[in-house]
Amino acid sequence: MANKAVLQPIGKRVVVTADVVEEKTSGGLIVPPSANEDKKPASGTVAALGMVNDKEFKFTVKVGDKVYFKKYSPEEIEIDGTKYLVLEEEDILAIVK
Image 1: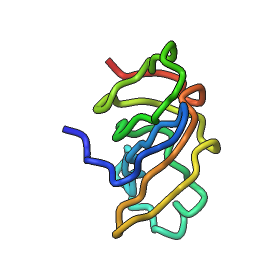
Image 2: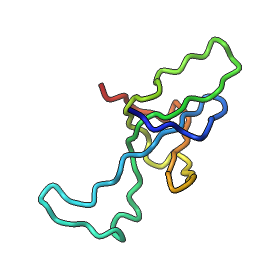
Image 3: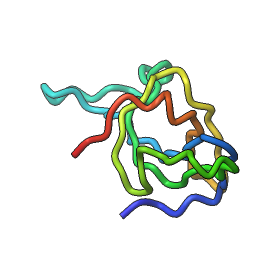
Image 4: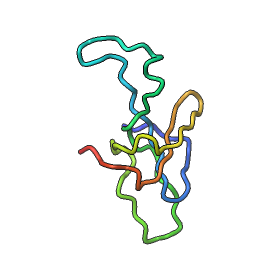
């Protein structure tokens, strides 16, 4: 189940809760947090959809979808210790089925 976002995006934007960046390699090596500072998330779960005045616009994604998106496109916002990403729907590359 998706986290309930405390943000209401405006327009054709989507709020995503990012997946946690792995801190262990597939070989079992522990990666120190300082090595992950440059690593931006590229996947997450849709938490909220924007409010669009254009009645003909329909989002392709829905709340709860796991998605992959362009790595450097989202804006990061932190509220009460939870990190949210806000991005345009067109920056979403795929939905995981």
